[in-house]
Length: 250
Image (cartoon, rainbow, N blue to C red; front, side, top):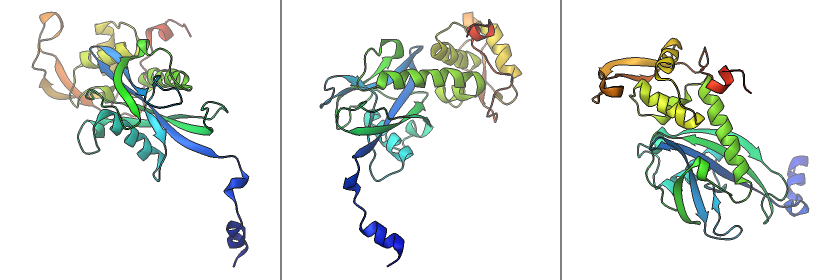
């Protein structure tokens, strides 16, 4: 028996305080022109009856798989069913302050998810209810989920400036007005239509024309708007800064 085998044979995890790992998901979508977050009502203690982000303990799976599983449980979708496959998923950050969970030391890896359209949620096995809630109506949340949600919103708003992430909120083919509605909802600011249109088309690789027009009329009854699809850019240069940032306000 090698030295390492001997060490492992005598190793007792009980010598250390227990630690668990969870995932929590900040899932965002746009409904009726407003940015919504997916929240569940906890069906068990701790924080029974409180709203919380969807999440749960990591099983014998990768962290990404755990986040997708939790999202699927609350949306009623499964991989391969179209809408879930279009979800943009990325790690947000890790939260591990002592006492964030009253049960034991729990380290949570938070994820940020974006989707152009997801159905009305179906509460998973450990939730009493689930709903899409406007982000400005989320209110007080269980654990440290209000902090996680705030961090997720900051990440989303910043990424829209420097990356083509907004295209994850729209369908495969979209108009510039569709894209502007995403920016307006996520940033919480009205945007000048003409200025926004010029800025988007000035960014190489942000969008590309399909050569087709939308079936609906343009704004104010004008000509049918052109349809675009996401381009191949990974970073936006020049960036699309929020109006407040353009004015020098930080």
